[in-house]
Length: 263
Image (cartoon, rainbow, N blue to C red):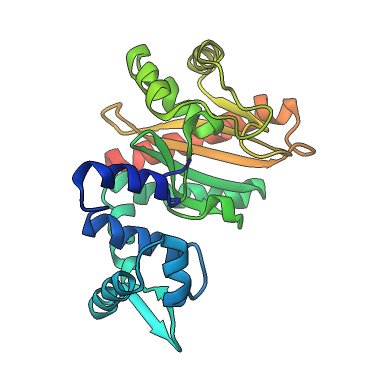
């Protein structure tokens, strides 16, 4: 299950260990995650969704409103714009993240397809920049690495022990019928990616969509993230996926590296 979804059973399990239910901090973020998944939520609805008492929900909301992280209108609560400042700091904390923004925009314009830049955090792929509208690629969304072309590119940069730890920790859940769920099949796929220098997603994350991704490196040869372009299978033919797109993506990844080296 993605980490940005609410897992109350997990919360309750941890609560059993500390005899006091979930911690204050975990309750706060459970409420925030619930607000983020809706458009204006009342205290009554928050109480039902989180299974916290109304007094607990009210107390946390009051603090969040006072701090500017939640806003209240006509009895309904929403996540406030205060989070934009924090999220933008996360998105620009490395100079390369900012450099990738232009490349994503240019890729989208040049190909007339959706383009994204993804980084890895805690064994998940996180969308940092995107071109084109699709709710599944919303900035900050976290997705399973093994189901994305960009995620597989990142996995291919890791040694066998790290990949094994990823499989044991994150698992290889089936997102579609085409998702790689066998560790041996994943290992073979990562070896192919290392050999050719790019990854292909064949409807492994969403039915009807294919994508191509390449790694993005810093001037010191550290992995920064992955650039990817995706679109419908009708346009993403084998020739397009294995010929034109990889070279175009490599060019953009190289431009990011040069920008970081020389400004």
